[in-house]
Picture 1 (cartoon, rainbow, N blue to C red):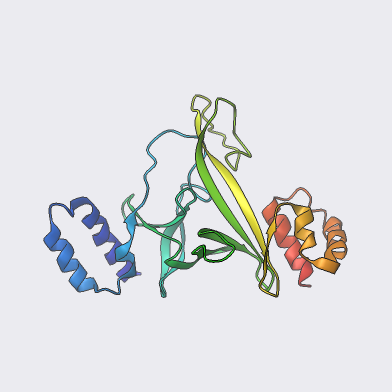
Picture 2 (picture 1 turned 90 degrees about the vertical axis):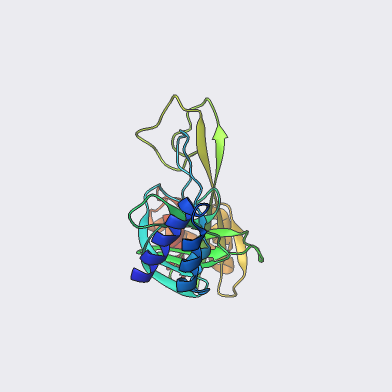
Length: 237
């Protein structure tokens, strides 16, 4: 953790003064060495305009977690995910500056019950970050993409991904959220999930059995994420 703080703190300093003070940058690179994975991060995107919603996976608040970058694991780091640029954000301790890392460099992010993986886009999953739902062999990968849109209508709630009690009715720009879900079975194959019906079809001959078990749990009012989690647990019993 101390090594991480040193790397990030000096890197933030380099962002602000690199044009005037290349000597310090060169000296730091010599000390850190080429194995310093976080040194090659970019400064995170800054959203300085008013808009409803937010550009991040859940909220603008950073969470504490572990991040694996090119084989190196950094523990207890302040993290976030930019759902617009699809970049992992590492907050520099003691500042508001964040380093942005592409999913091709980030293998995983773990924080309490949140688990993410980064994908390069070589397979059926497009490049970006995916939340992993499920603890067993059966898993569901959820992607969150946000785009800046403009509307004179009230878009509080589903369009921005949550109900904002401080919603600004005088602001027309907002970050629209879109989620994609993919099911991975024991054979490793990925199938797109668009709704509950397509979720149960992933289980083949067991789909009626599992739907009946899910109905018995009375989980229809749960969010789709939580609904999927319950169905996965039922399938692995």
